[in-house]
Image (cartoon, rainbow, N blue to C red; front, side, top):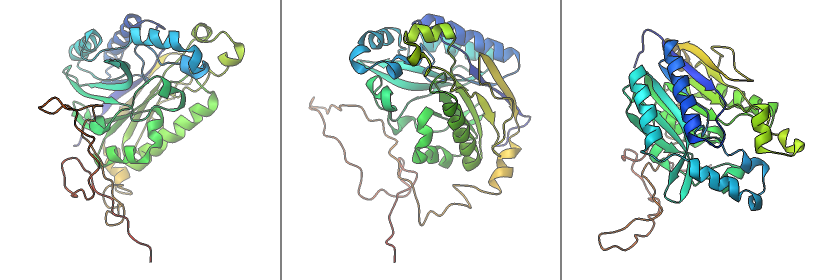
Length: 342
């Protein structure tokens, strides 16, 4: 789908209100309004921004993090619920597409979730991070393929991944195969140091080049006072610094505005959709540059609840992957058939 004139987008690098779902939500609503006043039509927020990313799990051993984990439960977001309603309303009032990271509470589990609201306020997508990374596995449950999809919005075809999901090439390929035009990436920021920021830049620029789409990436920010709130030990405080790279990348892998590496702010740029075809003329990873007779991707896009009840009330057994999934099945992009090497 051609988009003309250009689309104005923003990536928000802002700090949460630690330990407060309501406080951080208010900052989100204010940032949306601010961006809309500047003509922005899509805004992306950092990973699990409401109420805040669980930085505590990076600096505390599991045996000591129970109190903070419980506090995160208390401040987490239920979908649907008041936070969703508030963001939906401001998206509708301002006519802006919003991609928001949340800690989602569902029953007795937390999830790293991404919400995508269209410009009319409708919630088009709720997806969960497929595999939490390292320390995050003590905090969140796993997602499934139900949310691994690109959706049609007022600004084009939009997909999203969180943080190190970008190191899962098959997850990225699933979105590329659905021909995303704008990819929304989210990272926590304020962690690990400059090397994390450098890795983020490499990752998002590579995805833009490989997919031939725009990438809008948002990372979070912690003030010095917030770092002290999370960690008393100066040695641990040092690992809660750097790691910020809020940026907007073209399909040619170029920065479209100055990246934000410190402090709060909005990275804003105009997207010229003709650059998508300009890039894909050279390399279309799911078109003329693909070799589907050699390499294909099988994908299960069905929701995967932890238990399924039959009509008799018995728990149904887990369903194994099919031995031979048809190439054109509704829940498959393609099926991978290894070929023997002569």
